[in-house]
Amino acid sequence: MTRHSLLLVIGAVAGLVWANLDPGSYARVIHAPLSFNGWIGRDYAHWAAAYGPAHESFQIGDVRWVLTPHYLINDLAMALFFAFAGKEVWEAVSLPNGSLRGRKAATPLVATAGGVVGPAAIYLLLAALVGGGAFESLAGGWAVPTATDIAFSYLLGRMIFGERHPALRFLLLLAIADDAAGLAILAVFYPSEELALHWLLLSGAAAFGSYAIFNWLPRRLDGNDPLGPRATATRLRFGLWPYMLAGALSWYGFARSGLHPALALLPIIPAIPQAERELGLFHEAEQYLGDLLNRLGRRLRTPVEVILMLFGLANAGIDLAAPSTATALVLAGLLLGKPLGIAAAGWLAARPLGLGLPPGMRLRDLPVLGSTAAVGFTVSLFIAGIAFPPGAVQEAAKMGALLSFLAVPGAILLARLCRVRKQTGAASPTSQSRTGH
Image (cartoon, rainbow, N blue to C red):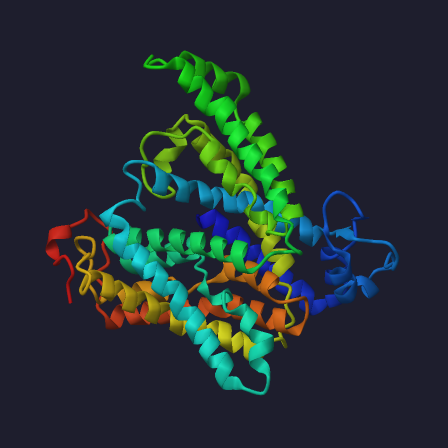
């Protein structure tokens, strides 16, 4: 996670500096037309209105699609990032000891709901109070502050709570569930084009076909044989190739359906053979597991690091003069709505609903945890680029996502005020009460 964060920051800083020193060359490179009317690309009319005049190859005519580096990064390559995160979510939900199953996940999941509703409510409320017709132009960005950057929040959480504190696992569960909710929001509320949902049949067929032929059928033929010779032979002979082909078909189906294609690999994840037990979210020991899903996770790790650097470069190129009302709304949602929503929902789950907190965690840890989760960055940048068309409002919303790093000093200060007990040695869950004060 540290390498993910470092390369993402390097890319974001490079994009920010480049766009402010030479905005013309930045736009010409990031949004350069690589081809017209190919199999994939973004809507030409939108691209032409925002970036066309800056390119010598600008043309008007019978053009429907244009392929750009920005599209390749945000719509194609980022599908690997969401697959990397989706793999952890699927294991946590599907495996018998998964972190997002049963009573142990109840309070983090309720807190997650607060961490989504709180920022959205603060954003929309303040947008309505601004008046002057601003609500109509800004309301579509309500989902931007609902996101939590998994890597940065985890690193900040380790700094505040220590690696042994139960609040750190609570935070990681919340961040994973939060981004899973963000993916659902993207799919439902932010289609990339006019919807043509019949194309999802291709994605569904790819997922079902790869599961049935290369996963379910060999195990079915093995019956009760504990050695599983057919399943083993199938995995050794074909490896990940059937699922890679299924992923390509699913991506094309999503791209043509109007749903954002960055989500397209998620239906394929459940089709891939997985381990029988979950070791923990992003657990280091996963590198020793031989199942295909964990092999996929290991293969994605380095490409995802590079992709996140390119994502930062392609999305953080914001004019430093961009801050406006949208910036303030996104920041208010993240820095105020996120901590309040998580603390309130976490308290509701722990006390009135009687679900409790993990042993060793106190109620006063909840607002600190909420502030730690207020770094939106990656997914907030991603949603901002979808929620608003290219232009000043989109750049202002992205600036709010970048400035969410202001949550770092706030979380550290709040941790001191709440007297958070950093745990770096052996855990001592009996040293504190179950729900605490």
